[in-house]
Amino acid sequence: MAAFFARRGAATALFAALLIALTLSGCGGAPEPWRLSGATMGTSYSVVVVAPPQALSRQQLAADIDAELRTVNRQMSTYQPDSELSRFNSRRELDWFAVSAELVAVVAEALEIGEISAGAFDITVGPLVNLWGFGPGENAGRDKPPTKLEIEAALARSGAESLTLRQAPPALAKSLPELYIDLSAIAKGHAVDRVAELLEAAGILNYLVEIGGELRSRGQSPRGDAWRLAVEKPASDQRAVQQIIAVGDAAVATSGDYRNYFERGGVRYSHTIDPRNGLPIRHELASVTVVQPRAARADALATALLVMGPEAGLELAQRLAIPAYFVIKGEAGFETAYSDAFKPLMTGED
Image 1 (spheres, helix red, strand yellow):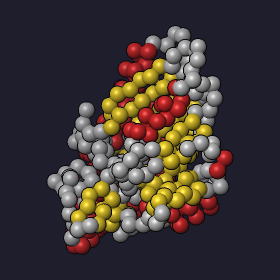
Image 2: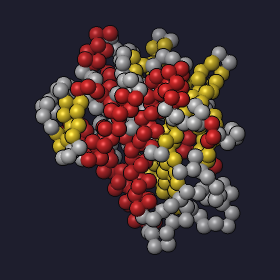
Image 3: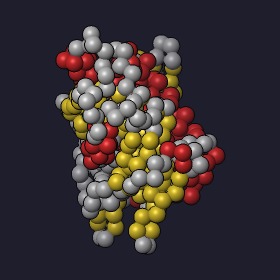
Image 4: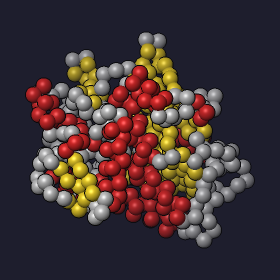
């Protein structure tokens, strides 16, 4: 399968490995949970099912999950040239372009998060992501920053105000021929939600779904208690747990700048681009973890808060009662801050 958003560096596969270790330990004499995994979207997925319905076929469930993830790719991948999103990005016409209802729903939520964050989250940032080498195309993997003129030109081809949507029949339109949508900060979360909804439709009440570090859980873990998840310490030279949280029925997403970057002249250039100025973020916020009922929203909010930085991001999380956990680079190591809504989730373990 073609890569989806292969260069996004938020939470890593270690996040998933740690949480699986936390949730599967101590199962005692209970039946073994189902563990289904595979590759998707340029990363991996993992699904844990506890006490599945007796009539349910494990093989059929695995096939259904793979089929659902292939559908998300066909709708929202920027790496598949024939996906709905890629065809919209490549066209230069300004009239309505018919797409799936799912793609319109994701774009609508992304535009809402953009308004909430005053432009810190913008799915039309694609030309800038690609220019800096963190997306598909001729600049992929570049190791030097673009020029000021190149950045200004890419900024001129972006802007959420140039994108409109229609719910029925579902369609997208743009007022700039070169407008390019990049859903890398929301589509993985959306895929997690799609798999979770598939599980619930099959009568599964206890599960954990993870795709590339974005997660959603429901019911009880194999130990019979609430799902406990690990927030990774945002260090590029080590992999360890920063904080353990008990989330229950919720989704968790982490966004950070510590895995995907390039260095030039002693300067680190993060993959996280501020759509307001076209530059990689340069503040001291290393990662943000957000908890929400749905993974798509958690995914987008985590990116928005990361772009905003530690002060503005925490202020927004407090004002909107968003459960958010911030890890900040300090002189003596990592420092943490969190919104009031996040505090009840902390277990005291690390």
